[in-house]
Length: 442
Image (cartoon, rainbow, N blue to C red; front, top):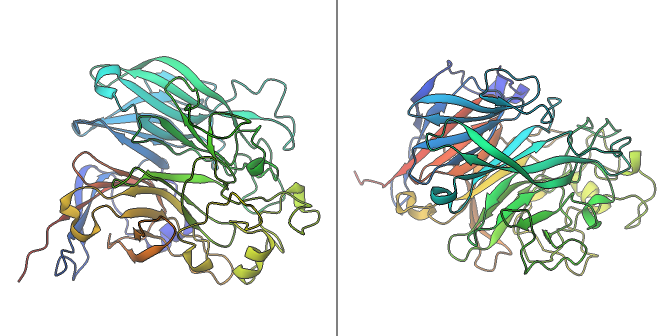
């Protein structure tokens, strides 16, 4: 089924269910001067159920993709094959009943292929799971091991998976509703996974609306992991409490990308009614997010979580919220300062990628991030894809511009394909392809 946000219904062009490539056109005026490429967007798939992430085989013959509410599929030669389904799904080659979604922020999320996929056929998958709840998950204020990272072996014809192994079993999950905006179970569930230039698996997690999470490195929530294919921490990770953790102090990491020029990792995170951020990660560093009550001059907060305070349900000046519970709190000596703060707004920064290939012209090597669009108070919705020219030191932006994609949607997933095109998933059920071509003078 299609799930469309109110914003998408208002502003998105309505497309028919299709499989293949349908042209959506390109913005007038681009492709002229300064090696600015012409960007054209075409439709790959529509009619999906919250497509969340994508992963291409190195030869470009197959694209794996997740649907948050249903499962994992693969597109081969214009045909979709359903591979791994969640509890209650249908039509999949295999169903795993411990994998589930309530229809909120949790479900089947990140997917990525191993760096040596051509030889080991390994695929990694992030999902909500009931398998390791054990004696936990009785309240929102205790341990709840409810998200996992699995690895599978992909068949030679790409049409089936086997040999499931759960390599991370203890990513925290929010089991019940709480007194916060978007406060249902499964909130702030993270889920983006990527392979770094070092071949290790990087895993973004969320704070799951538990105030102590981001600054407590005994729990896997509000952190970024750097692990090997068996779930073991990289030997160089510096967090003593859990050697799988690369950085901590995050709110809800849905974007991880690596700068081609030096391999540095950057995250994209959406803020709490203020300050979406893009941050260059530093081994052992602190993102500075600390929504716990009775800290930083704050008192008690609803359900022990100060992430939207003060006055969490009503519109107010974003700078007042930022002063009360900062996204990047400067009282931490190990703070990783953000390179970008979205002019103080929170509009829903999600997935991220770096543009690769000379076809992108002046944009080659720049970062892109999907802005999903969250209008609250007087904040403009702002659904878009931004292109960021990040300073060499990773601490500021040289420029930020909007990519001319010709549509306004909740841009959930971004990934570069082996054809140097940017693939885009949207919450209303589409996967699109943005291609860039060299400018031609007239």
